[in-house]
Image (cartoon, rainbow, N blue to C red; front, side, top):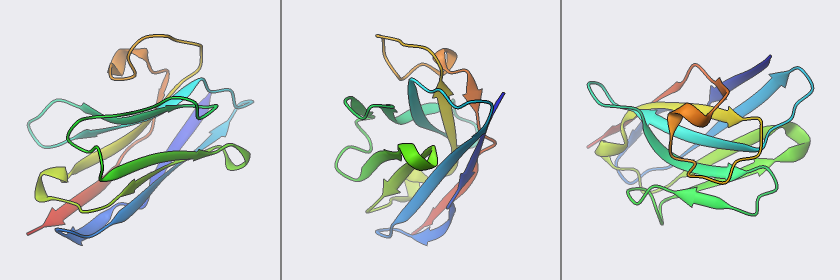
Length: 126
């Protein structure tokens, strides 16, 4: 079983930046794609960004386009989320997710992922 561990969350003022990391470990690592989701109190978990492991395809939610950037380091089995120009509405717990097998549909559905991390809190103050 693969374990996903997120890090890099914290408290930042509006307009600031954070970089989240998600490190995968466990059985022989094999990922088709990885994604970041977030969940604010009282709200559904929502898609933020996704990337296939070859890096050919990258997807963003409209709310973060132009501010967030997803990337991966294959050698380290790690995916990153660079978050710039943060806004108070970005406050949420951010989760990393991984899908093992090839898939041609939307990365935005929580149900397509095989593994999830425990999440890291991001708080953006005014």
